[in-house]
Length: 276
Length: 276
Image 1 (cartoon, chains in turn brown, yellow):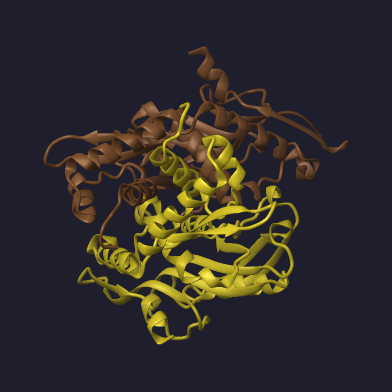
Image 2 (tube, rainbow over the protein chains, first blue to last red; image 1 turned 120 degrees about the vertical axis):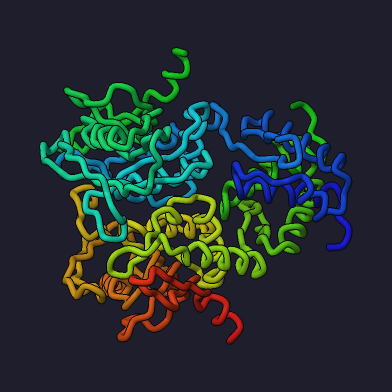
């Protein structure tokens, strides 16, 4: 392509920005590629920024100076979030999900990249102002949600392991009690995975008593890291909750294994915003 | 926003398309939102499609008729792929990665959403013509790459487990020998996670002898599913390889634990294309 029209330039610019959230792209990169004046590029960026903001889809942030450029910050509007959470709750309320012991089958939802991307975008928007350095989860089911969230926060994912391997290098290990089964388990995190003083968001798929999240908090304490938020896709009622502050997208409000009936409503994700 | 100019419309349309790869968006959705004629929307889509194709970033596919619409198929150009693989090899060759036993520390790379997204885009492009129904991996390290790949293929991820839980529902279990440690392990997959006859892409982070991939193949055989491809981020030399056909992005060509020296070159990903 020899000559770039504004329309073609806009399409290519927004593609570059969207596929690399948070990455700083120098304006000269654009100016050189499209053989356009920096002033034209700035105008294009203004158009993109305005549309993103007006639709609640995030914004562009421009950094001035020689080392400057522009980066895309992804967000999602509350209207879209509510629609996604509602759809999620409907899916979670399907009686086929009920497993022995009152668990719910979640693997299909946790394997759906489109849904995960939406969930990640919601969590990234909820915790947008927390300056998150890393997203922590524990193997196995929390990983896809943590990865989706991290991709929209521009932060790395770190994964704690129950059963660590040599491939983790040196690890720090704590012991944690699973609230539901009262079983004592080891929880390990690679020493080099998290710098001291990191601001960490904990993400998991499911929380009942919160023993796993509590274990992850203990682990972060060993790393002198700060827990700046906890996000779970689904919470289930528990008597002695070990975690006080968290954001949940959905909540099991009723489950009857015998009658094969389950009801899932919105979690506290919108409540906490309204209370602010 | 009351009135949509073409430039604003283009920005919003490509945003909607890019954040939902493979999802069919009816033209009427666009026409209604922007209060524009379908012919204008079609022109916009032609512009987007042309730019995507000319840059090797995929394409739009339009489905005609009442149930029709447009969907975005993400791809990456060979030029970009080569640059990403080269950067990956450089990172993998850092001597700090060498662990006891000749393993390499990969967790930082496997926790970097931007890199994973690029790797996923490369695998999705390599296996683009395989009509993939699902991407299969095994806990834990393969999950982020599988998820990234699946998101660019519009396919779900299914995760085999060494240590399955009640939350998987009924499972099918096979036994597999880890080629490196000669240890016999169970490998399980939830019965409802994969329909019979599925065309499956296996994705993992690392392959030496290929025992894990072999185990995943055995598991797929039990599901009467077809293995249509195997993709690994990093391969390491092995004498008796249990898997013949695979695509690797990078390859350990030399490792000396004592001298703390490791050399990683491109895998067979570009070779197999040239040989075609």
